[in-house]
Each structure stands twice: as structure tokens, then as C-alpha cells.
Image (tube, rainbow, N blue to C red):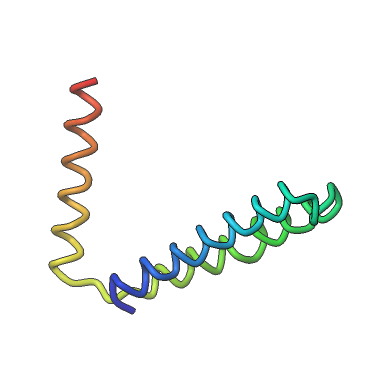
Length: 80
């Protein structure tokens, strides 16, 4: 699994959230359907997404990207 696959996986989850919000706004999903979909996401989709994201092959490029993100987070934290 490469980084593009990981972004695709996250994009799919985001698209599912947008579709769910749209269906709720159109009153296609009622309160019991909302609870059912919430349980499905929390108990099935998110754990599977986390597990699949851990299957990425680790290399130095990923390490450098994570280090850069960590550095940016630290800079943003202390500049605020």
C-alpha cells in the first residue's frame, strides 16, 4: 500500500460522511437510521480503516514526511 492508496482510503471515508450528511439533510435517514450508521462507522469502518492504513510499507520517505508534519505541528503550537 502506498501513500496514494492511503489518501484514497481517507477520501472514501470522507465521501461516505458527506453522503450521509446529505441523506440526513434530505430526511431520507431518520433517527434510528442515524444511530445504525453511527454504530457501523464506529465499530466497523473506522477500525478497518486504521488497520488498513497500518499495512503501508515503511520507508525513509514516509519517515521524513512524518517528521516534517511533527515539526510543523510543534511550530504551530508554540507560535499560537
